[in-house]
Image (cartoon, rainbow, N blue to C red; front, side, top):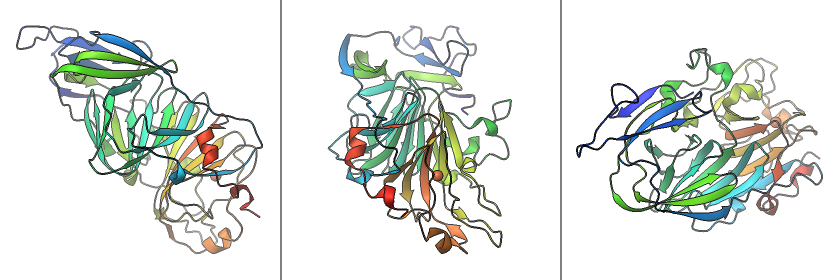
Length: 384
Ligand SMILES: [Fe+2]
């Protein structure tokens, strides 16, 4: 959904000369998707971004998910994930994934001592708790609880949590672009009137130019591998940029819920779309107002999708035994719905305080060993 914007100093005409105080030319870099045809931005560097002192192979990115085993509804207790003092990349524990997307959590206690980018696809970091700054080549983004941080493929960044504060993230690594849902965007690329949020709700980076010299490491994830590049200049040496491809933040509290007289289906909660998956936001809202309405969801068989919900805050009316930080996985092929007693109990309720993030995938998800280690084995039988 990113729209055209510009920051810092850029030449009046693209692809023309712009000189530094010392007489040297700035280096223009096209940062674009789909060759030269997709969304793009133009960045102006003090030092050519091709200048590298040394290259090191840091080995493969391990993202192993097993699809086999009996088909079960699962409850993963992510608060039990083993954590060490880690940064926003090293601290990831990926739980679920397929060829399109991987889903996990990260507990961030340390700033990254290096810069990082994924050349495999967009990353979405949802901030459950904590605050800090995501420093990017486009500028800084201050983050706090409830933020969806969208980092387009190729964006060099560094996450710096506030000192003494732990940041708890939900991490979604896509193999492609994460965008606004198509049905909320008009032909001109603008968010439409019936969309639950619009451009005004997005927070853009504030450009900060670094001209320091020294030893800077940039790690690049590509082709399931990480390569380390040593630079003699700070990688955030951009003095200006313009275009429609850049990182941004949307806070879940700015999602305006769509409500109705009878139960509204999950698509009204859709917030983003990725390759063969969607992201939805369940936010505090008024409940259905038909005199005979049933406020909790009807039972459903999402036959051709797997449904993953991360519970952020509030009461989760339709689920028993679910805590803050829980993840439920309801796979395609078997029905799910409210547990016994929940429907009757919900009747007459006028509002819900639930806050949750959902990812529905259109291809089956596998589980990692880490997911299995924090699984509540009783969940499958919680409908008895
Ligand atoms: Fe569901």
